[in-house]
Length: 439
Figure (cartoon, helix red, strand yellow):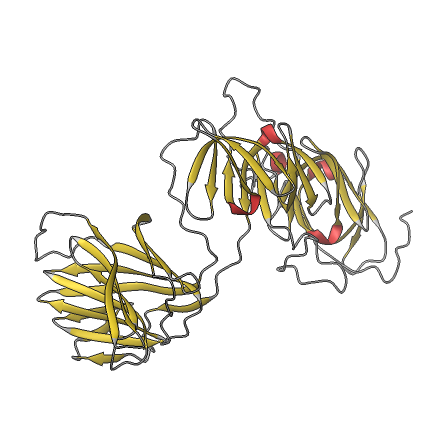
């Protein structure tokens, strides 16, 4: 006779079977080699389920907890994401690293020691940028000079000499980026920080883009008059294209740091130069961004985006898999060699030319070389727990009760996860769904 269930037990989740059948209700408990206790929605008697036919378990949030689409990992303050060869992904805080171990002081499963040789990548969690402007959009309140800028199908177009300006709120550190394509001989001036829409190049940064160069200038007000000076110039000679055809789309990214007086430019994801103001500079006081075209051609500006900047520069895509460890720093530098260890926030890193020390906080990402292909093949995972914060943990010997989900990790031994942190568990060998395991 089935046991009588507690009347207050909340309904939750969904059990999906390998044959496509589904049951809604709450999984109360599960142990290896035994039927699981399950309370169907609307029922008052506990059923016994054969878990060898289950392909997926979906958990509802704990009664009174956060919605299912919100993170509830217990490690929201973790500032690193670690990916391992068995598809495990963990968010947490790295305490120390030696030749064999990566120690986490916090994670969804609490403090853990993970084997370093199984690491694929360690990345610093960066805050999502606050988007200030994204467009263009037809609703933008643009101020045109020359009446030759127009909005059409998600882009701004210019003809001949004309300017268009937009008022925004500029933070102290921000990224301004846009796509540019031209037809014919046309140059583009991009002004950032002008005080008003009638003086677009006054007390502002000016990025001058031509078919063969990018120049950064500053027109700054001073106590005695004003100054107009160059911060840097980059030339990229190109053959003159057929003026009847649009040029290829080029992506420009300009990183502004008003606190340091430094501006850095990237073109199609590649760094082309930076400029720094002289000591005692004052940042532009205005909030006007503008585009001015001149020449006999036509400019097309699209995918305009202005966001608060988290301090990280774009990382170039690797052309080949690394053969040794690679460290990407927050300032955009990349080092290859071996991270010898991390203690008390200080890294020791050996390269072919020097032994270096620098704060761990300067590392944006650590990438490990792929494993030796002659080694043992990676086993197919028995179960993968998908967490609400996006983490996932590969487990075997699952045990589930009202409070926790526990199992054995090939990387870290016994792991216990608070039940409310887990969104679902998948059994890839029994599922027709794509496996969550990374290649």
